[in-house]
Image (cartoon, rainbow, N blue to C red; front, side):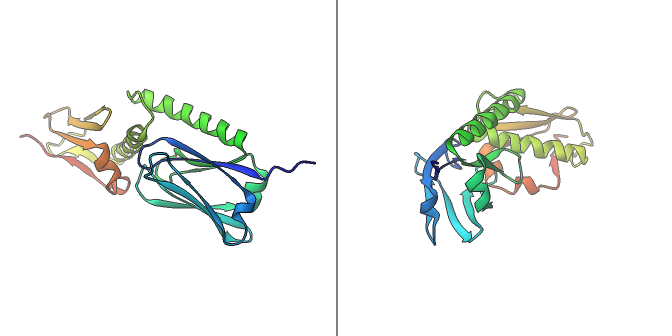
Length: 203
């Protein structure tokens, strides 16, 4: 009987937005050891470290909210499951995939296909860093609209949204007031915690 102790981890880089892959052995996680995987761009890394005898902690910076997310990974999941997936809590986009190589590869392909479909439906043609950021922004804008917390101070709540590669524009259909939200501004702010968004009327 051959026991495969090799595992693969993939994560989405918070800097360049690309998926990074790394390989390690379960032996490398023994004791107080840990493993790290760095993106080829050199601007991000993922860490897997022992939490206790029953599991590990995965630490990675999120490209969606620019926060360090920490995920608990039970030992049994890493030992037995083909792939365990983790998503950003703010937007359900796959962030980390860890397990056997074939399972991780398949999960990444499925996740990328899903993002392709959603991003395409939003009028974008890429799934890089800005594409995923725009998904976050559109999700929040829809939430604000549903809560009647997105409107213009001219009194209108008819707001048009134009999604572009590096930013999105919100425009009042009544008075023409607009606001531009850049991808960088969305990433570098507490956009996901926004309670209200009001456009300033041109009147």
